[in-house]
Image (cartoon, rainbow, N blue to C red; front, side, top):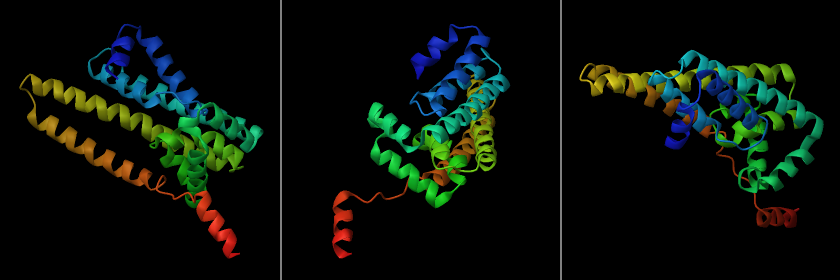
Amino acid sequence: MVDVQHWLSALPPGVIYLIVAGVIGVESMGIPLPGEIVLVSTALLAAAGAVEPEWVATAAAAGAIIGDSIGYAVGRRGGRPLLERLGRRFPKHLGPAQLARAEQSFARHGVWAVFFGRFVALLRILAGPLAGALHVPYRRFLLANAAGGLVWAFGTTYLLFSVGRAAEHWLKDISWAGLVLAVLAGLASTWWLRRRAGHLEQVEVPDEADERVHAGDR
């Protein structure tokens, strides 16, 4: 992440915003890219004054919402065969086990899988294409997608921006309390969101042996 931040710092702010939107957008279409790393690195650059946090968050939210919507359209058109082809191309990230977990998350949590999926690496990549392939109504998908994208983008950006600024002041012996409050608030909010989102991944996928046992019972 340090290398990403160093590389981004050498670019003009406008280019950085486009990179943030582009990487997160492509990731949201179903292609594994380090969208969260790019967002975190850019938010820390904002804390250092290199870019504006509101534009970082706006670019990230736009990339997430637009990318997910494109992924939804592609998934609705290509269906499950498209997801299986992506799984063969990216077996480490989108293999059969990951796809099965994501499908069961949708079956169990419905549209909430789209919202909280923004905070889970697996569903952040698969939410759009999978929602399209499963024919989730687009209006419901868009509402959850937009809400999750905005909360994730602005929450992550301003959390890291605030912590970074507070840390900078602390290092100058100006604000101990600011650092403590920022860190505690960040840890609390991140813990809650990760815990809530983590329920989406805690879905057991039956293996082939179990399936054979159940088949034998029938």
